[in-house]
Image (cartoon, rainbow, N blue to C red):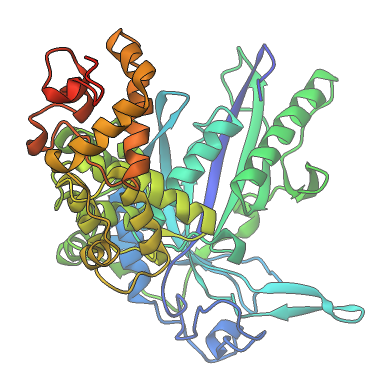
Length: 500
């Protein structure tokens, strides 16, 4: 979407990432998805009188990992607050962090259309999720499922640094990549593990102050995020150009009509009337604890991409792709360090392997081919034991669950490449005799015919002839350059005595 001339857009995102813990933030209830309604709601989650919340240590570890991942400051003391605001999907007032969040002042780098830009992160704070309203379970009433109540969330709040829907999506994807890379969140938007609230405002190009903003709640896909923001930008500009004014509000996105509609007037922090959580003491984080979390962190995607380019010679595009997912990066690392040329490993993984995974709608974590199998395949290819064509066939056998080693499979199926020039000479001579016109044209400069002859040899040998210059027995030249070029050995004369 192109913003009309004379206008500028300001977008900030609040991203709710469900932390990947086994139990809830203030109780021992399970966070498992898909359980029967209210089967995972303890007395604490239900807010019954006389029960007290107890903070889950794992949520602090996850929050610290995220903070370190975005270069933020980790507050050594963080406090919990309550919203003095009733939701029907909470049985008590929601516990969150207001004045002293655990993470402040980070940033991430996004890339869009070849240009890089930093998006600032104001804060990331811990809070508990609400339950869920179910409108079709009981006639003439709304049922409440409290399974999600108390599920730990990290709310990641950006500055309004994004100037288009495309930038907002790029930022959302970057955060999604980071939290899944760090195993902070599983990122499953279909299950509600990550949701976006988009704050959108427009202003005249010459204006200094931000415009009146609308918050679009609970967007659960990158596509809906982009569509909602684009609609909202157009709506606000059209409203202001008509001479009307905007009011600060909270809106929902109708994905079928691709439009936003008002949900309520926008609350402010004053409306929530935050007050210090009376049942939880401030959490003090020691330097040793923070360092212990830092020691468990993997190499971050941007750092890994830079290393792939500098140390392995990968292109920027390949480096970004192979470092985009931690499981994919670890798979590549396992293969690249064992083969002669890491670029060959990159080509097999980004091409054949990811192609099959996408086709089968599987992730690299569920790949039927192991790194060791791919290493063996590439080593056989590098050694000239099998041809590129045969390697593709062996790859498919690996994908389909080959239950023996790659080398055993190649030997059993008789797939070794023919690299002995003595074994290839009679076959080549016969092909030359059978195609004198093409041989003469090749000698005359029609080099494209080399492909014809190579194809004939590969056909006769079922793809097992080794025509590589790197094969020692062929004296650093391909078979056809060796036997067809002027001045070559005896095979330059056909069986009929005609010099080729």
